[in-house]
Length: 259
Ligand code: NAI
Image (cartoon, rainbow, N blue to C red; front, top):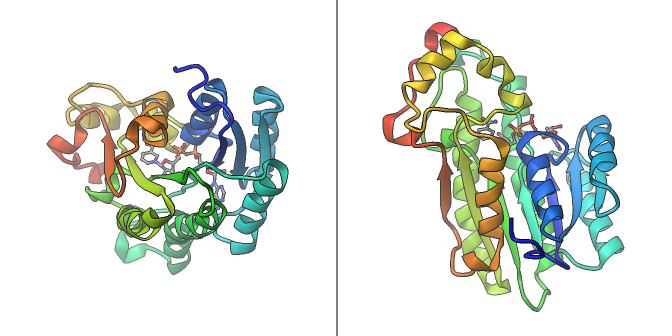
């Protein structure tokens, strides 16, 4: 932690009420920022607010709905007058083998993961573009942007889309001084992955592919995210930072027997 590194900064984080997003919000708060935390879960947002106190403003938002996203960023702008940093982290996965995958499950996953990042970026960039010192956007994609997984075709395809959308955004938004990068986490221990993390035979297979020998923690992703959001990364835009304990080196394990 670098106390005060983000003092005075206004930060918007989506999916801020759980897992990786909540830890990102916590670290920004610890380092002096004011955070507007967007999430679809009103209940978990209330828990986060009780935990974080008044430097954290909750915003109920469904990132797949443009008017919701506009309202959440509008709340940040009306309350604080500016937006400096945004982390587009909200994500879900509703998977099945391709031959059984319902169109509605595909749409739910792809809309949340990919359209959610587009809508968020659009309105974040509008809010940031007149800042004298620009802005920063970090998109939380996934190692699945590079590596496919059984029953995760929609999720992996959408995350690959997030990586390309990150590059497109970096290209278009550089003229406003807005940097845009992606973080690609591997297996991280959060509510999203509990069903897998607690499946010991599955984890045994998985661990043969993760050279650092453990699942990551939300803090393992939050710290690199804050680095990309910080001035230390001022010459970095349009790139991806893989945060996976070395898993990409070895490839995805064959987990088909567990699906
Ligand atoms: P999580 O399930 O703990 O947190 C996700 C948060 O997003 C929840 O609070 C949820 O309410 C919120 N959310 C879901 N749909 C939303 C919507 N439509 N609008 C607004 N908020 C919404 O999950 P976790 O693990 O913290 O995931 C965070 C991000 O990291 C996701 O994008 C996920 O795909 C990505 N990721 C996670 C990995 C893992 O192993 N946990 C690995 C790679 C990427």
